[in-house]
Length: 183
Image (cartoon, rainbow, N blue to C red; front, top):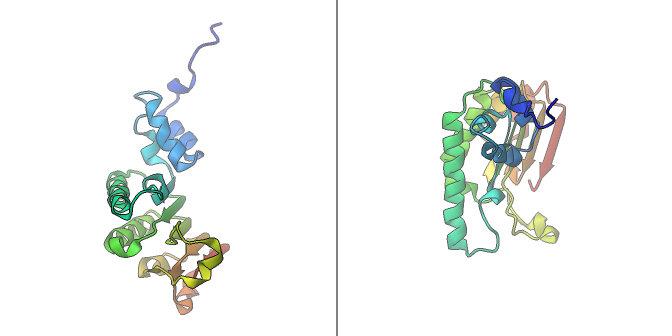
């Protein structure tokens, strides 16, 4: 028997999507270079991580980082516009200048809510903040209404540099984990 047989290529796309969903989002995207069959598999992953640091280089001048942030937000826009799955298990969003992209962030969160996301992580802290001075920074983003409205299905919520109204957390009956930072 030939030991060089590629058995993975014979698997159906639905199974490849499950396999890609076990990978970190950035690694799942890298599978697109494996073959034509894998080209768009990662786009249906159920664990989505929009992380600015994949696009923005902290050692670049601010003007370059602004352009890189635009590319990052355009990527997120295109991804959600073409996403075909009905359910998302995990969505993470890390963006250090959310004020520049409020409507896009709102759209990403509405997208997550419409796909019944179970685990939501929002990090609006700036990677350039020094750890010893973290408490000197105000929250960069206010938790929007769609997140509160979606609370009954969320199992995990992580908020960093994100303000919120405690009184709006009355609907989070499935929440098992809540992580807060830089409030």
